[in-house]
Length: 202
Image 1 (spheres, rainbow, N blue to C red):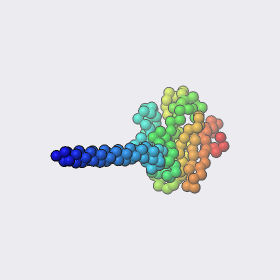
Image 2 (image 1 turned 30 degrees about the vertical axis):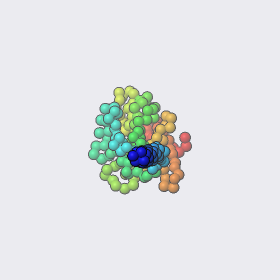
Image 3 (image 1 turned 180 degrees about the vertical axis):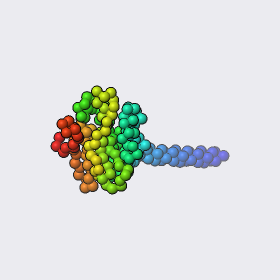
Image 4 (image 1 turned 90 degrees about the vertical axis):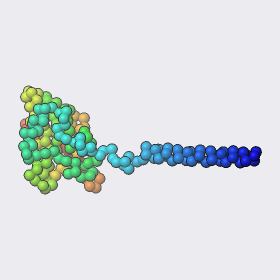
């Protein structure tokens, strides 16, 4: 009887040790998988620069109502905001939910003392060639009480490799080429000529 009890105890201890070992292995695997997920290269989880297309809408709901009205007048069945899938992959890496295709400038780009200036890349829906893009700036001079007016920076251009960004109080247009190189220009307003240019020299 004592031998049977000893055998039973030994069997129980063996089963208990086996159960503990299994739980330990399972826990290790779980922790390892979690650690791998946390430490995995960000590119394997999707680039942090990948745009949330649902957020890339111009004008954004929070933008001034006067800007929305100016946008409706401007598009007039012909123009629309360019879409992310119309740009090269290199350019899209520099888009996010805050810009790339459009930007609130947050500074007075044309010296009219109005600080509600917005830049947006548009597409001419009457065209389907590479030069269907354009870059427009909407600005509201202080004296005109937030009446937004559009001005072309570029029109009938291939802008499928570019992204918009800000550098301090400047609007930057950067072309991201297929060979990995890039070239930037800075948008400036020329009051005497009443037009914008994009100059490579800062």
